[in-house]
Image (tube, rainbow, N blue to C red; front, side, top):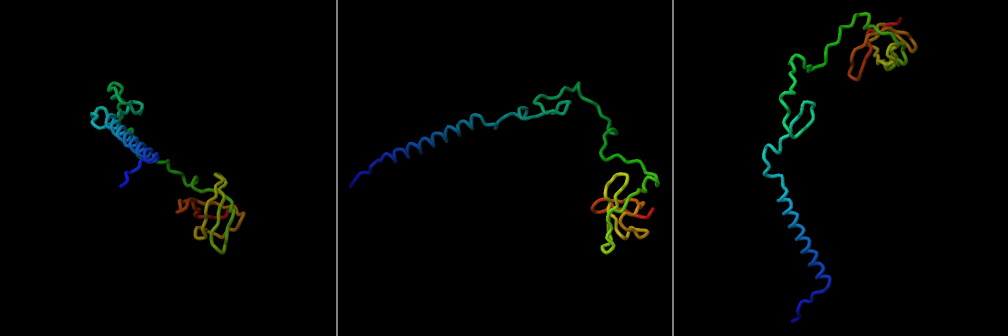
Length: 150
């Protein structure tokens, strides 16, 4: 019977394999030595200082600010009620399709385009008519209501 012959490439493969195993062991030992496990709770704590920045030291109690609960605003502040004269806007009909029953009015004050539906008309309108109208929030933005010719 013949003995197994160790060739150069077999020796190289064995060397690479052992080197890989050795590197793997070293990495595992390094991870064990430098792992974050076992740290105390105090080492893992983070604090917020008086300016809102994260720090590793607890904040100084003497710099603490007292805030009254009434001063904290949770929602949007109420807007002042508008008078009936301010609710009525003026504009020019930029587009109106009679067959489909809708169009757009260009608001003269804000220069924005406002959607208008035939159901919101108080009298018939056509393009380039000057109109007065009120607005309400529709499903896709502002809609004109109570539309009249000037």
